[in-house]
Image 1 (cartoon, rainbow, N blue to C red):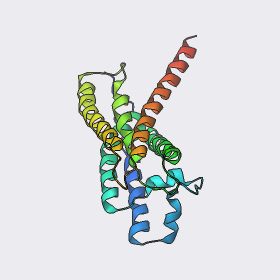
Image 2: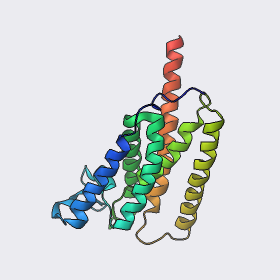
Image 3: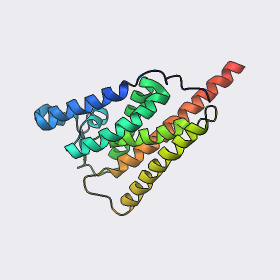
Length: 202
């Protein structure tokens, strides 16, 4: 298959996202700057910036570490396929949409923070981006099988846990909504690209 247009460029956006998460955590949980709490997503009184700023906030070191590890793995994968701007758009799109769904579905006393919704979006985008019939070769097929097994396992685990009442302090709604956002984004982009190609042929 044809190599990705971005395969020769070094990933940079994923490291910028990781750095932003680390800086936010240091300011919030280590230096304890009072202003950082304004970036959380308060469901009872939402400010316009909170659906995106809350994506860069985390409640604990374990919360941060888990998300950063998966962001590094799947963020690099998405950046390899879609480039730096594609990764940044995917991260923000899925994170914001996951938070908006959480606002609708969760109680008003909820406070949301964390990159989990955005990371779950990267899960699905990393798999779907490799399923392009134009560039599918045996290496990408192996990648799809490996990544897909992990993503499907995570999704089934989330749905099972959510159906059983969930785990306290874990936003399962954001996880599932983030994954769904990734699928929606890739589907919309492919419809757009196909439409543009058809118009160019006319």
